[in-house]
Length: 511
Image (cartoon, rainbow, N blue to C red):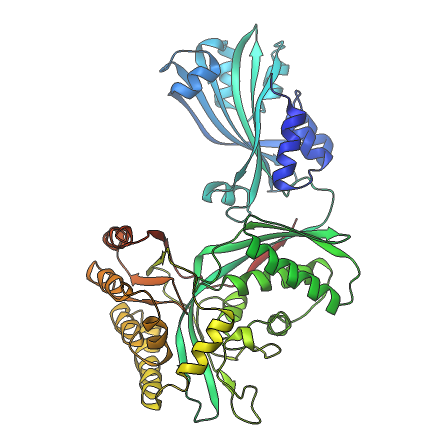
């Protein structure tokens, strides 16, 4: 028999500390519904989502010690607090039809009654055997059921109920890690973004930079933050952990908060690939800490505090607003905010550029993100050196970029005209600083972009310094996915993500 105490210790190594109630829910060999009523102080109710008889597959047949193909009752229920719409437990059960008496079968298949209560009312002598307990990530279905973020951590357990030494029911019960806690926690989900290009890297009008961006549904950043005496950060990627730790330590010191925070990176994405991971991580950390310690600081101020947005305001605006964004850059010259051409990493203390255009981006347009397996995009001193060598860009190209964006790209977004938007994206790849960024990439990049267009995308380009590329279409992108994968396989491979625009910024909730 499985050692549930040892299993819970293993779960805590992965998730962090569990509350006593969570441990009991995972380890009890009694009725969960009774426990929930004691914990919540209210009666619980059952909402049956699925109820049908199905043939047992090989896994269920083994679990229930029956033959493959035997009839089993498949039941999916939500266990809720009677006084709240909140789902406490999501349970999936399988019961061999032939092992049920007619009256038990009727209760199980026709009424919203907890299984424990059914067994008690029919005076069945049973025992429970826990077979597994584990961590899983919330898929879209369970994210909706529990009203939580996708990829949020869930706790599950699997057990069997025996009657007369035969398995009567196999049950899987699942609940969010952030239910039944004994301390305040903040969860924050923040989007990634595409950076389509910089508007003016010439500066003759007294302003530089100016960015164009689209907020993405995927990939995302998901952080969980709770109070702790010191700053502790958990996560799989050492670079992301370092970013979060540095931001948390610095911000807490600036705010004069003597306490620390325990921060778990539940989900993140690759850094220095052109999707804004650094800004997403930094702002998520700062904003969550402000929520945790009841400090009200505007997001743009937080962005400057954590050293983001010194060149482009797109990442900050994507975090705050979502959608399609254009920012107005920074004043430039001896008395301006900036007096040199420089990336955000070299612009500490400069606030993000003001948002001059914010518009919903068509959510029915598919966006394909392709990240070739090449070294990360330019950053740090390498990035600064590129700015020094290639700026200012020709004024004629700056004027062409601004004409392109003002008179084709913007109207295309407003009119839902994907053909014109795609043409504008394609044009921007040949102009200004974007032309410079693309010229620094591996020599197969132009061919990959062209392959994406030929396979059905109306527009394709590179995000920021890359290596992430993107393609846009309002039809299915299977052909573009296949063409991109085939192209990547000829070189070093890579990652492909099919997503769409996100017309809202970061989301948070207390747990």
